[in-house]
Length: 292
Length: 174
Image 1 (cartoon, each protein chain N blue to C red):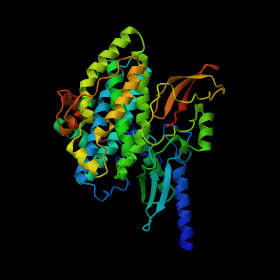
Image 2: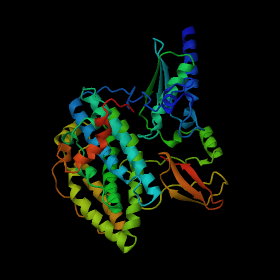
Image 3: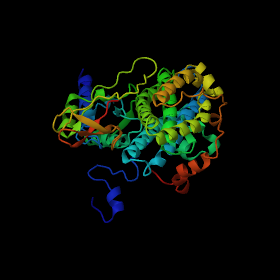
Image 4: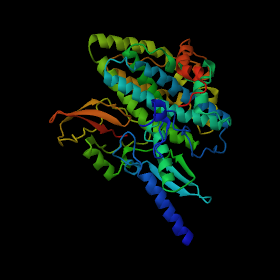
């Protein structure tokens, strides 16, 4: 690095070898991907659905990074950060797809940084307070099992972009679930104290699970067009997975998922959402001219 | 026919320039070794398009690799260069070439085994450890243990050899 100060050292070009202190300029997650809408798929519905799945991932990722510098072990911190990074990547692709499908041309940053709580369509479990490590494991177990079931089916979506994003995500989500399962078993079948914390975590998380399987009208419409998955159709599969894990962890077999109406999917969130977004959007709000 | 030959030659040069770019997180590997360079096309107006595919959805190195490909292809004498994203089929570690695997081992990183085969339908759940146990890339011993399934980058896990006691990284199967 030459130059008089760090700033010039970072920004100047070195034999055509660009530095990236202020972004690479390559920000489009879907650059060059054929984004034509398939016949018979409604662009508005597709955009809304991509925002639902994208917001789930973005908000969950934001919750997970709260463990960075604060996890029980360095290895768990790295694991949770890695999982958050995968989810953030999925969110970027999905939100980019949303901006193309609705014809507004909004990019991932418009969606992530320039929307208020009522415009976010994530399920409430994604925004729930992080709680203790058992709660983190339980939330991750439920959300990854659910998302894996959805993405597995979405690989058949009539929207080729959504199908490709899902096919990529399946491999990542299988890893996330595996991580959550390994900790659920270790804690549930661990010391009486760890077991008790898991019992409390499952009790805390369970009331929020009903919403995951409540079909929003847009999900129903787009599923009928062959481009989305009606979440009600994965209810049984996810319950079986969770039953297998929790009983394997010497915990009680879980209660049925409670009945619920779509809440987060309709933009109705808990009071947790606003402070979460304040943090997520802070740099973008304070420095609207910033690039990265 | 002359046009076709020139066209083929152009593609070959673009491919060569892009293929030699290295991964910023695994600098011993080129994009060709990693298997993420998908396609090169020369359009009628002379624009060259290069398709690369992300390893993980959130791979932070992708933007850097795109800049590097852009820079390398321009340095090879092409003015208009577009680096595009290919999403399908998804990349798996099976795309890493034999040469890439050899280089990883040489640099003390254990290469991945076969990517998990997904049966049709739901991804099966198993409560037992499912991953293969990698050999130590430093001493070759088979007796190794996993320290963490997630490492310093998305693509690697952390292990330790019980024979030589050295820690090592493994490119995990995905």
